[in-house]
Structures are given as C-alpha cells and as structure tokens.
Length: 313
Image (cartoon, rainbow, N blue to C red; front, side):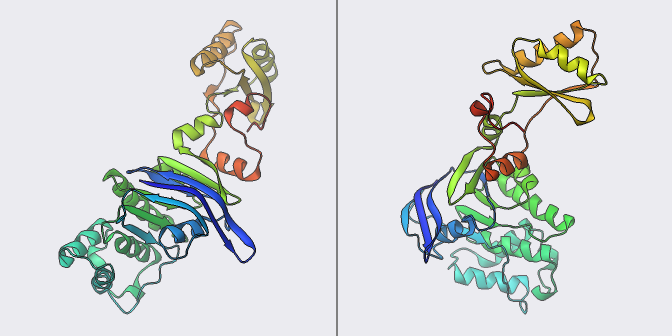
C-alpha cells in the first residue's frame, strides 16, 4: 500500500532522514517508534506533502491515495462547535458525499455525538483529540496517520482514544500510530518500525520482531534453592548459560538450534528428576519496551547474535 525507499531530508546542514526504508500493507496498524528528534514527524510531514523530501522514493497504492492526518497538538477553532468544524473540514477536503450523514457518522464513531453542539473551547483534551480524529477520518482516507493521539491525556481520555483506534483496526483501516506509549502499540499494532539516527533500525510484524529479539531462548525458574537449581540446570547439554538474579530467579539460556518445546521439556524434566519443585517456570519473553530501549541504546542485537554472546536482557 505504501513503500518508502531511501528517503532523505536535511535542514540546513543537519541531516534528519538518512535513507529511510519503510513498508506498510493495507490493513496494517503500524507502530512508528523512535526518540524525539529521530525523524518521525519529518517523515509524516513528507507523506502528507506538508514539506518536500530531498531524495528517495515514495510509492503509493494509487495516484489518488487519500491520507488523513492528526498532528500531535491539533489546533481547532474554539469558537465553533463540532458540527461547524466538521462542515469546515468537509469544504476543505472537497467532500462529494452527503455532508450531514458523514458528519453524523464520524461523530458517532468517535463518541462525540452528544457533545457536538458545544463550543470546542469548552472541550477536554480527550474530546479535542476525538474531534481531531473525526476530522482526519472525514474524507475516508486510505491511510490514517495519528501523531501522539494520547499525548497528555488522563487514563480515561487515553482509553477512549485507544478504543477508537481498536474499532478502526477491526474495520480494516490502515493506520500509522506514532506514540511513546509502547503499551498502546502492543495493544493495537500488528507491525512496528523503530527509527534510529534517521534510518529504520527495526521493522516487521510485531510477533516476528519479538521472536527475532530472543523470544523463547531463555526461561526463568523461580526457586527457593536458587543455587542448587542453577547447578542442576547447568548440567543440561542444551543449556548455554545459567544466571541467578533477584527474587531467587534462575535465568536459563538455550544453545542455538533447540526448539522452544524441547528447551522447556528439558528444563522441567530435569528439575523433576532431581525432585526440585520450583515456584514457577516461564519463558523470559522480551516486551516491546525492552526491545525499543535496547535498540535505541545500541545494545540489543537480534536473536541469532544473542545466542552467540551478544546483548542479553
């Protein structure tokens, strides 16, 4: 649906994007991640034709592809109510359908029908974000870009906005979600891209990214007798390293080539053979937050490197 090849952008002598590659398929909810100043907003502004690119290729699904954009801090006309504002949006995007019906539809979708006659300057931050999403959705965009849609919202407002995004996802919408709240990305996104130093450091479907960075290659055994447990597990020929950490947790790393099922079986049967009854045994799966922090620090390497002595969480 959207493919970016070798995108570059500089401001004066400062290079922001240094050959960005990015790929989004129809129906993806794409978590676009990175530190402040890494080029996320520049990328979104280029996609929306707000600023020009320097070099690179942007391939759209069609020449008339429509993009809806919610900026991080939407500036709305406070003296208007939602009906008036969305009528204004309809005029701006030259909407050709029934404006009254479309306005009612996006108000219902964003949960703003009951507040639509109130002036916008009396809205809460969450309500403003919802009207901003309604405006971005108005022209039935092929791609919806949301820049920090839950920024500075209280838990209730954040939950409201995330419920809207979940509903859009269920309806098959294609969305770029740019946010620092990684739990929100894990909740709704199926694909992620981590931008670092102006290039895409990591991109892929979320499950694949988590697997790439070590899912299943380590198991935690919680035991009252951590030293004995660690000593017993170290004797297994398919075990690479064994470490004891806080709470009497024994972290066991597998050697390369063993499957998750075999790895888990070896651990629990060995414990049983030595009559060691642990308090718990589970896979030490990295979260998206751990992956994000590790990638941006330059310490976290993919699974194949982890198995040969690279960074281990």
